[in-house]
Image (cartoon, rainbow over all chains, first blue to last red; front, side, top):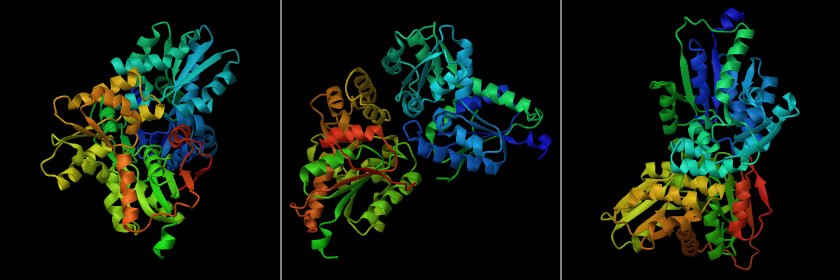
Length: 271
Length: 271
């Protein structure tokens, strides 16, 4: 297919559920004219407490669905799926594949002055060591401190982003960084930008938070530019949302994030 | 098959993950000589935020696995799966089927003096109205107050059963019952007995907590007695544990609950 035609295809994005909408939000902001197909695997959410083998299997079935819809680039908008399935998807998918880990790491290395970087994520993402590996690959001298924060996802999904409980949970987890001298913290889960205000208030203003969603959207734009795959901005922007199970929290967060009601959500059965 | 032979078969128990171990613990206490086969669907956990259709599909695949192992009774040790799949499983499974809802309801109706009963559970269990329906069936005059508590499961899985955060979360949810005049609260999720101390301390001693796990174990014993299916207490007790995904929290909770290390956990692929 010529690039002229390919460029009109969609950006395919998947996540375990609702978290990847933080990436969709940034992609829409940077590339308002692009078609987007989003798949949230709400029937099998969450991925962050599951094993590598299971996460890879789920990622592959999500990608088969997106490929069947015709996409020009694949975005893994989930840290756990990026940690475990990026390599295997790069090998098997013809289209360019972008995960959320590398863009966040590059930004963190650009930002840090102390050379000490914190990472927070789900238990599976932290266990995978994907952030440590990526940081080491780009800068051997950087020091990484990482901490799993399992309650942050359910807190965000419950809508308790701020307030006494969110603050107490954040204090308990982030105490880990107290004497680490980090000056940069990567939000290594696409849900965590929802808790940004709480996390920043616990850590103080001297620590810069890196939001992978923003960085990933920039990486998508650069990749499309470099490959001459940017869409025609005059085309009517189409955003399709597919879920593997009904989800009330998806609807409420999607509407909040994308600024208008998402009407066209379709349920699919890939599990 | 004669009852003599059937009685030597296993009690089959499934849950979405680790919560059903509260039921296993009580079954072991009451019926130490019985063989038990437990399946925790850790690859697709949690069920409590998923739709009826998806939960029924998952329950059916779990039951196919247990039936293939040879069981004499089926126990649905998960409130959400009981709420959505008990009726369909009773219709399709030859063996007696016991869920966790009816036993808890009976105990609550025996206990209450005000006739006002509280129920807490996952969003899906509460949405199903299964408790209201069951209570109404047995006592039309009883009044039911129900409240979904989505953060209780992740709190229990994180091991934060007590302390400041568990207390603050419980206060926020249970404030709902403040002026309801309930004197009995059903713990409508098999994880919640883990939070019993915290819940009781927030509600005060005048409200009796009903632990469905204990009541379900009694119902299993009665059902086996009535059908002459009790196992031979002299047989060596065998407990087999199957999971659909590796789970660290399963191991730690299982060991805490069952008092000794579970060594023989087998991973299966039914998803």
